[in-house]
Image (cartoon, rainbow, N blue to C red):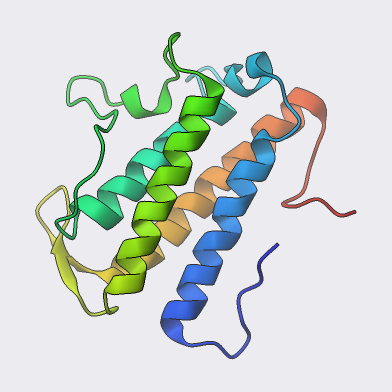
Length: 165
């Protein structure tokens, strides 16, 4: 598990914090079968795999679209606010995990190439800096990793944010 450096620079520390939570997202999927990662565990339909799909979409959106980079088609639908959280019957676990990995890699490229003060345009039209996007994505990923903690515990009793072997 990556640690945030105690004396690191701002960008390095923000990236390490994001990576720490990203790794938790993947860890929460490990050791479960396809039915378990798809299992809807709340009345609103929250599943581990749906949260991973959502996080891949928002990584692409916030890091790539905001700063004028291309993305693959994203699962957002103005008429269906939960489309990016729902796992469709034809989507495989492997496809969604690979989507998350590609989104993370694309975001990492943006993070590596831009300065914290670089400005972009968010999906809702506001001007934001890379710093703001990094802070927001640490918050977003940590929030959903927390949801995944609860969902995973309900599925098989596993708790924690990393393997403690």
